[in-house]
Image (tube, rainbow, N blue to C red; front, side, top):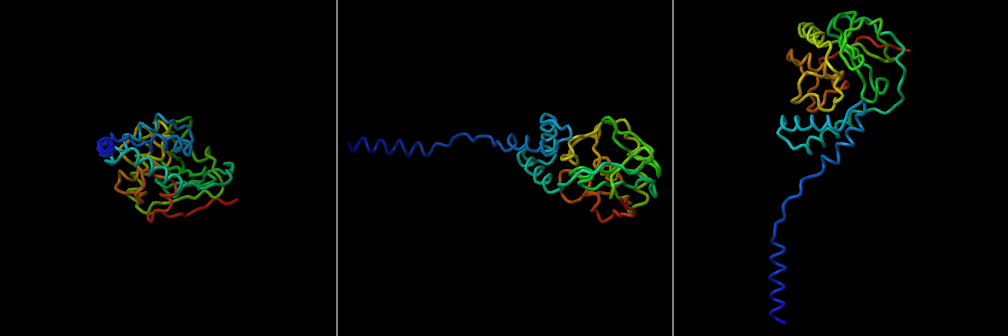
Length: 230
């Protein structure tokens, strides 16, 4: 009996000392469906996972960590409310490179924006492609604001860069649009952020992974000079 108890103790102790292989974290697999549901707008899990892997490599972080950062930022930047029909014609801007900002929730829960290629045209998205449109053809919601970036030289060059992106595809992944991804597809805020970033002006420097309209609107170099009121 004493031997059996000793043997049992040895076996139990040895069992406790065994280190099992680490189980891969499943946060990414759990978070991605929630992230894609939050984003909506045609984003697919497959595309998001592809972009997530690129972002993780660029940031030298795990995909789980990046997914958690994305979800946290998504929830922090959204505004719930009632969508208002786009019934107002977009006015002309003071200068090329200015920005039309439709705040949330009127432009969706994350808002929307366009950059002026010229005083009377904007770079917009039609049928999934970037196109240059006359402002007379563009409808926006009330409370849309016209913004100016207080960098005249960079503003002009940013407008030219944005104009050159005509024909590129819409990027549904606005949550990871600042890290490691190519310019072959661009989102509404991403187009503007990249246009100015190439000119040395970072209009979204809050440390987030995604460029959101509210980030650009809140930048200290951005000034609102006109509001479309009811």
